[in-house]
Amino acid sequence: MPAGAWAVLAGGTLAMRGLLASPDGDQVLRTMATGIEPEALGKLVAGRLRDQLGGAALMEQWQRARGDTTE
Image (tube, rainbow, N blue to C red):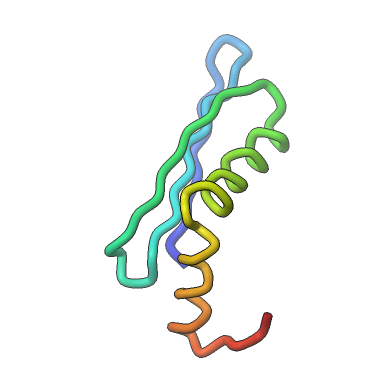
């Protein structure tokens, strides 16, 4: 599944960008967040992509495209 994250530390604050794309690249979801705790920030960005921006549906498309019927 096309996915990525990038974080930059500046002045004690992390800025993280996250990306999730459909199997064909037609849909691309992006979000950004800032914080000081790396693990919490990663979970926040991933949660936004999955739950708020439609990433769960993209992950289902990816599973169907691969023929993965496991739930």
